[in-house]
Length: 115
Length: 111
Image (cartoon, rainbow over all chains, first blue to last red; front, side, top):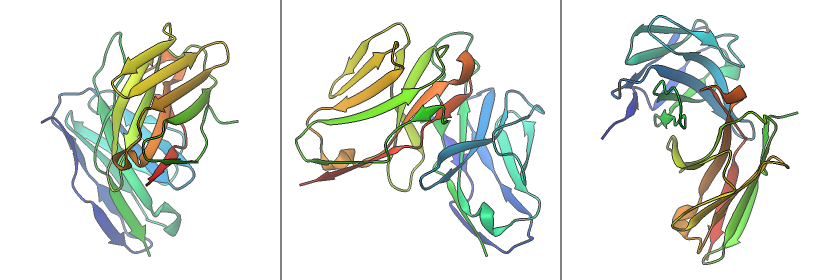
């Protein structure tokens, strides 16, 4: 069963801590995405990557960075966590299709609480 | 305004049909999608429709697309309690591989 695995389902961190959220996919997908999900706001794109070592800013990149050293792994980094980064974080991947539907496979999510 | 708009809540009785509506703005979208998110889980694809189609049916699900009005709907026939979830409409931005999601519609099914 193919999947996207987010290593931490629940994290509690303190303001100012550095936080790593890890995401691994086993589908050999080129594209990977990080979203945050907040009630009433839906999904907002933080960063995405279309290849190893490549990254692009999404709609809300401020306060975040990413790393993609290997094709299967896409990490989201909060350099100095703040309370307004308390949220559900969703990782997703998709294949690089030249045509056809672009279907994302999502992980189960990482719920981060910053105190 | 938002690129993809949907109402936040829908409440239906078990056995009735549910209709979730969505409007989008990008006329170059090639595909439009419906994803489902069950409590405590990530999103999973329900169905998608190619932009040159008007309708797509898959068992209890019917997707209707009105390109002129940029309106997409998802109809769930014989709604069950297991259909209670958040449903997200999405389009590919400028025909790219980067989807834009709506805010999600919480479907509540009561007996």
